Image (cartoon, rainbow, N blue to C red):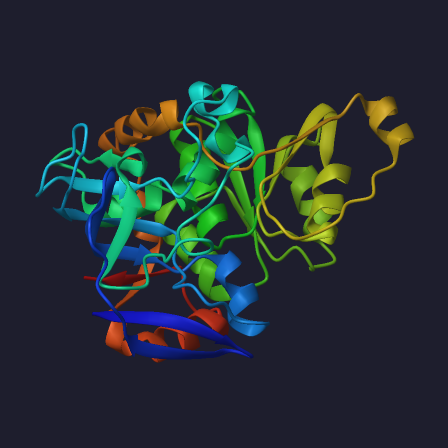
Length: 331
């Protein structure tokens, strides 16, 4: 079967690799949708990796050995947190806190291949009316955005801004809009701003580097400031901009990864600001996201490009150029 490897320095190889075999509770899934994640940028551009990457995955179980419930033909999304299954964090559904955490695409071979070996416990059954493509989105990019927004406890009419119109920010804006918030979106990428404008119709669309950006936000909120600023790009400047535009008792939500943040505690005290960071979804929230999709959440509108594995070099060219939303490898 075909599998992709990151060689580092932006290079990849498309290799013929051995197809995995089901063993015990580990099942074989035929991958029908696997998304390129922003975190793939680091091993792609830097040191590469030995395992097959890809952790936003959905597909169909095609081989089992001694499963508890899985059956050949089951359509599943793959939870990318492989854990012990019995510690307090696993039992609470917070798999990413498990001390034995591993992941497909890193410690295990991932979804940028025709087939995947994965523990049965990581297979989340997909209802017939939910596509495997949407399942792959729920398993990471939507899941991350959903929990990050859910934790803000938004009320209808709250005025919020989302920094970043890439896949995480796109989904965060979608969730906030569906929950009744008034939404502004900020990004430096015109392509992604156009995507947000087309699908979410936010009340305000801005380039955060514009000298008028802060003033525009304050005018939009009639001088009060934002209820919540969602930082979805992993950029310290974006986080600082969001924080200074918060209203008194406003909240900064850090959803983007890969930045350090230095804050002024006196400013936080003076305005009684709150701040939280959010990592990924709790497993008990899977059905909540299914319900949102059924209720009209445009989760799959973030997908702009689809490629077969054999065209992986082109897919990563588009990914690195940034003129895209989510890119999906199709089975």
